[in-house]
Image 1 (cartoon, one colour):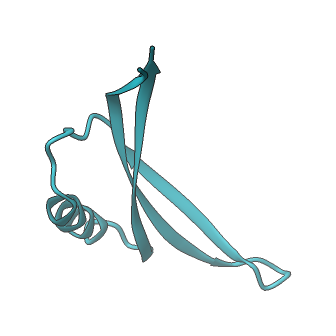
Image 2 (tube, one colour; image 1 turned 45 degrees about the horizontal axis):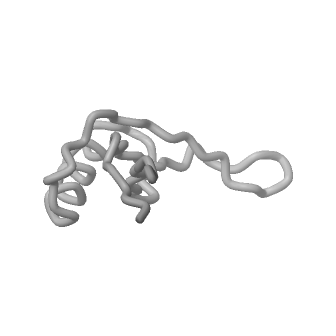
Image 3 (tube, rainbow, N blue to C red; image 1 turned 30 degrees about the vertical axis):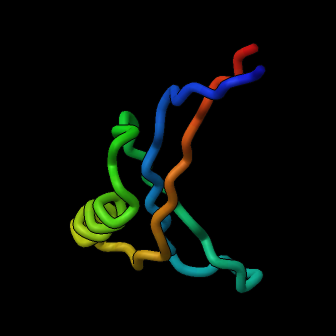
Length: 72
């Protein structure tokens, strides 16, 4: 039977830098690695909001990317 094992998680903060000449939003992403497997989504969201407040650009949102290995 296959099992999955947590490998790592990355917090991603997305910011708007304005719009280009075609009217499309220019986005920038800041990443923070080594998020604990035990971190709750509420805690990740709180940390993301706190970190975003340190930047001058308009905050768009928070994301959490996890990587898991599948083993037989």
